[in-house]
Every structure is written in C-alpha cells, then in structure tokens.
Image (cartoon, rainbow, N blue to C red; front, top):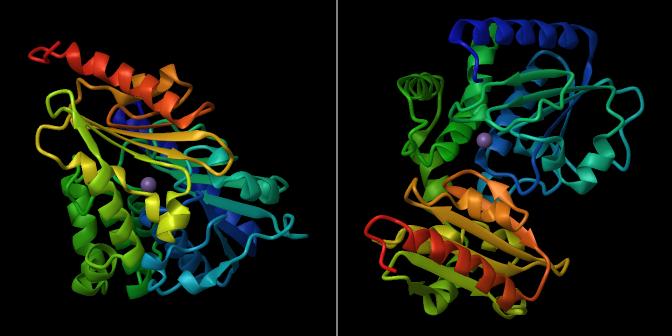
Length: 342
Ligand SMILES: [Mn+2]
C-alpha cells in the first residue's frame, strides 16, 4: 500500500477491527463485485458470502452480469441474485470485493447500491480509490481472494471445502494460474493451505482452464483468420467489424480475452483488439509483453487508462479511424525502442 510494512499492517489491523464491529451490528449484508466478473470477482464474493452465512448472516450476493458459466460450478454460486431495483429497506451493510473503484460495479449496480448506508471495500488494486467507509485494500498483492484468505485466517473463519475452492479459484485466476510475478511464496503457501482444506485441484483446473465453450473457439478461429502482424513482427492486432458477433452467434462475454490469442506470438511486443461496442463507441484492448512498451501511456492519449502491460480505451469515432490513430501511436513507441526498426 505504499507505506512502510509495519504501518501498513497496523492500518490493516485497524480496518479488520472496523469490519468486525460492523459485522456485530449488521445481520443483513449485501456482497457485490465488479461487472464483467472474472474468477477473482466471483471466487472472492462467493467465498465471502459463504463465510458470512456461516456466521448466521442473511447474505445477498449480487453482480451486474451474474456468474459466468465457467464459474457456475462453485458451491455458493447459486446464491447469486438479480440486482434489486433499489437498495433493500432496512439493510445496513454492503461489502464490495475486487472493485478498484465504485464505478467498477457497473452502471445498474451503482444505481442500485448507491443508498447502501455503509460500504466496505475489500480489494487488491494499486489504484483503488478507497471509496468505502472501511477500506481493506492491499495494493499489489496477487488477488482479492488472497486478501480475504489472510483476513479469514485472522478472524478464525472456518475454511470449508467450498470456501477453500472459491478462494483458490480467485487466487489461481488472478495469478494466471500461478504464473505472474504476484505469485509470491506467501501466495503458494496460501494455495497449499487451501488445497489442504479440500480443493479438488484437478477438477477445478479442468473446469476453469481446460474447457472452453464452442463459441469461444469459433471466435478464436475468426481472430486467427483475420489478425494482422506488422512492424517486423512486434505488433499484432485484430478488428472485430460491426455485425461479426451476430454472424458468429456470440456474445460480448465470448470476446473478453481475445487479445490473449494474438499476444502469445513470439516476437510480438504489443497487441490490440478493436471492437465496435453496442453504444456506438470503439473499444481498444491493449497488451504489452515488454515493460518498455507502456500501453497505459498510449491509452491515456486517447482518454483510456490501465496498467503498463494491460490497458483499455473507449473512444468515439469511426472504427477504422480509431484503429489507425491507436496503431500509429503504438508504431511510434515500437520504433523508438533500441533496436526497433524505423
Ligand atoms: Mn482481482
């Protein structure tokens, strides 16, 4: 959290204390995570909902986009409810997990949750805006599931097989299956502990990583057929033209991780997927594989943002025109690299 280690721990302990107080005062609790949820958002919110239920709380689990099919196997996923039209009468506490900012809940969820009297923010994003009344934020750690794991251990929450599995999915997916630099010894020890608590590792990995819907494969084929690799193999991109989703019979959910397909190419340093959104804007998803190619900086020039290695833009304009402007900016960055060919 950008503070000396000891001070960070003291603040965290104080935040645990504040949450413990709130849990003594409230028996009806809402739990929500960010829209277009990933494994950390679902795993963390399901684990928290199960832990709160085990404490005897009435829990309402929400997400603007529900549970993606891939995570529906989690015990506790069936607790997911449709968003309420308005904040439920008499409910005092909302806990948001894995959402770095209030806006990450999504427009409909933000409106429905606005009137929550007390908001708790549990997260791991460096850029967290600390929108909660209580903020349990450990910036830079592997996953919100890891933040929760440590908190559950501190609180003496019984880690049942269902809670262990949800936390394991959260940590595994946010570390790229324990491949990213956030995979510290502590993260591996947490994973080992969760496996000991009853995670069926083979079953979870098969469901999360080794099975994909046919629609995803169909859209992957489309990307491979039409991707462009240029700048001496350093830049890969694909544009999803209007009408493609309808033609292929796919949804927005199927186009989520497309950029990963063209990012794996050897020699590629930057990758982009361009897509026309339903609201008329153009979305560009940018990825870098070279820390010297800061895609967040490029995204910022067009009103977007993100991290050095992963960023996004939503811009107004015609698809081909937006694409050319973003590609021109990326080519410029790539050509400026030492050894980059002008
Ligand atoms: Mn996360």
